[in-house]
Length: 216
Image (cartoon, one colour):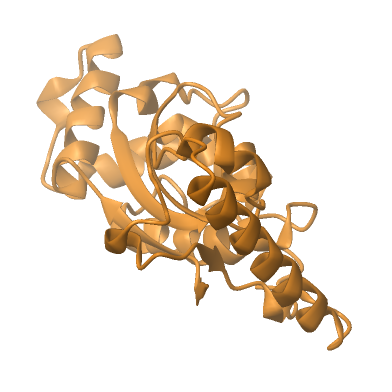
C-alpha cells in the first residue's frame, strides 16, 4: 500500500491576462464602450462589475480554467456536486490495481495531519491494509475490478480533471475554502484560491478564507 499527499496542477487553456481582456471586451459590448479599452482597463472594469449589488457575474462564464487534482474519492464525491462543470476521473471500473503498472497495490491519500488522536493513525492504516488485502483477494478469485472495487475505501487516491468557468470557481472557493468545508477539501482549496488570486487577478481578490488552523 502506498500513501501519497493530495496535490493539484492548474491548467489554463489561454494566458490569464488574455482571458480577462476577452471578458472585458464582452462586458463592454453591453454599453458599446469598446473604444475605452486600454492595456490595463480590464482591471477596473472587472472590479467594478463584481462590486455591483447584485453582482454581475454572468460574464465570467466566458472564462474557464481546469485543475487536475490528486485527492481521495471522498473529496471528489463533494467536488462533482458543482455545476456547471466538466469532470474526468480515474475509473475504478477499469483500473486493476493488482496489475504491475499500479505496483500491485492500492494508493491512498495521507490523512495523518487531520487526526486529533495520534492513535487514530494506526487504526486508519490497518483499515487501509485490510481493504487492500480484500481487493487483491477478490481479484485473485476471478472478480472483475468493477466488482472488487466494492471493498475500496474513501481514502483511495484518484486523479480527477475538473473544469469550471470563472463564475463557478468563485462559488466553489466560497463554499469549499471556508471554515465549514471538509478539512481535506480545504487542504486543496485554500492554497488553490491563493494561486488563482496570483494567476487571475481581480476576479478572486474579494474572496477570503476563514479559520485556517492546523487542518490546512
